[in-house]
Amino acid sequence: MYEQSSDQEVERTVGDELRWSPDLVSDLIAVTVQDGAVTLSGQVASAAEQQRAERAAAGVRGVRTVNLDLRVGRLWDDDADIAHEAIVSLGQAVAVPDSVHVTSDQHVLTLSGDVQWEHEREAADRAVRHGSGVRSVVNDIELTPL
Image 1: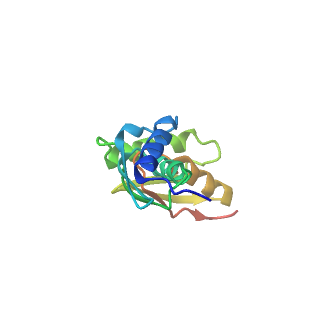
Image 2: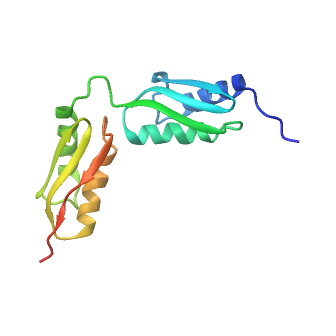
């Protein structure tokens, strides 16, 4: 018969799992557990890191659900920093034409401009989606085939 893990055991194991995840800055994430419900609070650099933390916690035996109370973005991130990083990322993405532009407002990136192919729209989104401090991406790029 399966024995339920105690909340203390689950809290310790989730904390260990986060610490051993090489792509997480776990010292900024606090773990609390009540009746198998894990709450992750604190700060992560990106939405991608938030998802990795959630997956790491959810994979621990005894976890019934994971609640996220994580702030996305470094303390020093502002929209100008986020937009600058996105512009650099777009410039390095081979499949993204120069006609794509980006703005940032409250850590939400908006992509605009015109491209000829859907794969260019998708490449632009992928290039900026996992940037530090990015909460979400609005892809307003228009398709204008030749």
